[in-house]
Length: 471
Ligand SMILES: Cc1ncc(COP(=O)(O)O)c(C=O)c1O
Figure 1 (cartoon, rainbow, N blue to C red):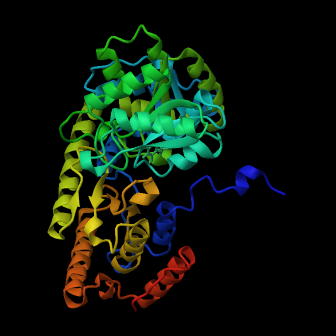
Figure 2 (cartoon, rainbow, N blue to C red):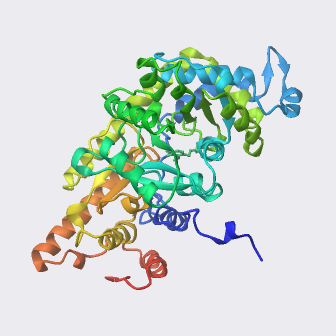
Figure 3 (cartoon, helix red, strand yellow):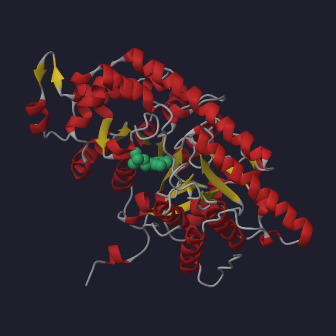
């Protein structure tokens, strides 16, 4: 009765990444109302600099009131229909992107296509660059949403570039070649590589050496590169951020064919912390891609009211300078709080310099080195510890035992509670280990029996064969 597209599950929405969210929504932590609830650590949202935006809005009521020079622009915006977007907004956006990159690169607003978030930008690029059944190579671990965004509606396949903890999950030339060979063995035509720089879930930016290997690779194979730079403004530590445009520019490749195969995805969801506004974009040097993507953007335009408000905010250069600087400092401080909380619980993280999360190494807490054991630990962390974290398997990490934990979507107090829970958990594991050699005999940390039984029921549904409770 229904289409094959909606009947298949290639959207990835039933991965543990999304299922953990659903569970959180049924029982969210609240310090007063629900202190035993689940703390959401699976959401890469930046709430740390919201006050700066709110105070800008409070001092600039005309922007929200759609007034300009004492006159209403309501009618103009309400009737605005051009899918090229407001030129004033695009001009401010490219300046903001350049500022985040230390003004080392310049962007042309004519090469920019507005989309409803980076989600839509990534999908649109897939439609423009690949046919159903073609492949894109992606370094693993990658953002779980890519299975939906890149594959689901386009029919494009993802082939993993296997990165390993042995070198901090860096992209190597041999891993690129291996992925390419793998795609060919599968009979797939490789159309490009997609990287996330800085990486979600690693929280690290791509080094210049990695970018150079990638550029060599796409030249050799005559394919595209898409660089999702949605976290570019979150780089709070060295090494500093190097955009793919800067790396290509420093090799003086602007006048070569490769320039037309470089595409950037960006969005204001993370750097400005406004994912609800759905503002994303494609920046491409390829005129045909820009023209096709502009036409496709009709399926996911950014409201002109939103474009207007954001163009007012971004045109205040004093504000954006302060925002970028303050936001980075706050992220760094917050990340440090999480890293030291985890360290106190005997847990290490991958050394990172960006993002809204840490890539956390819990391999020592697994019962065995398998993905089954990772799932079991994840269930314990969700049900007993009361934290919704993302297991590495949801990011297609090739090694079990890694988890992504977000730190910028909650208050300091909540993060401290989360770290206390982690500490209590690892202490209980240690004592259980000492007592019996089996870490899973620890006491549940969530005392709310209603919560526990509800969670347990759900986990049983999730993994009907292996749900072992310890009530
Ligand atoms: C790497 C990456 N790309 C794209 C997105 C989607 O962003 P948006 O909210 O702008 O659609 C996310 C969101 O988490 C992300 O992490």
